[in-house]
Amino acid sequence: MSFPFAIFDIDGTLVDSRAIIQRSMVAAFEAVKAPPPSYNETRKIVGLELGAALDILAPGLDGATRTRLLAGYRDAFFTFRQESSDVQPLYDGAVAHLERLKNAGWVLGVATGKSRRGLDGIFEMHDLQRHFDTTWCAGDGPGKPDPFMVIANLEAVGAMASQAVMIGDATHDMTMALKAGVRAQGVSWGFATREEIAGSGSHHIADSFSELDAELDAFAARLAA
Image (cartoon, rainbow, N blue to C red; front, side, top):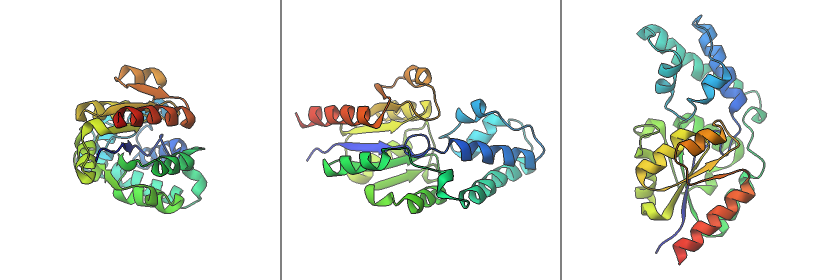
């Protein structure tokens, strides 16, 4: 049986984590007395595995400082996350979008640069796990833009690449999708600019959840035909 399969990124796609990620990054860099990155620098590494992301933002650090920077980011993020669910709000329409897909017979997965601990925190905060059939994080294997997480999603539910759409807000998501042979569906409301997403080879970029609904409906109709 051929079913439509949507694989979602989390940060910048379903969850507006722009403020907490930048705030945590600044706190981590200040703790090791290093110049913190600007938001424009930070947004370009969101979605990558944390170690790889920090190596881009702060290349050439000695091992001890790098370890402190990694720990400092995780600790700051955890601390800020405890303040309120408002520090990681869902984008308006995200839950309705997921519910609509499930009701239409879609199978749903996750491919995120978050740690498993971070993903579990989001699921607990917003009661999202019930929507997903399989979830994969950067710590489960090679991170974005390696196709590992998309391929793992496909294998977990028994889907072929032709049945699947990878939905994300970053160039890493689009590159990962294309390497795995699935449709690369961008959204414009997260970390990357529309121009950056288009330049990374996306098949389509949605500017709203209603537009994303329409694109996925069209994909499912083509699959059924």
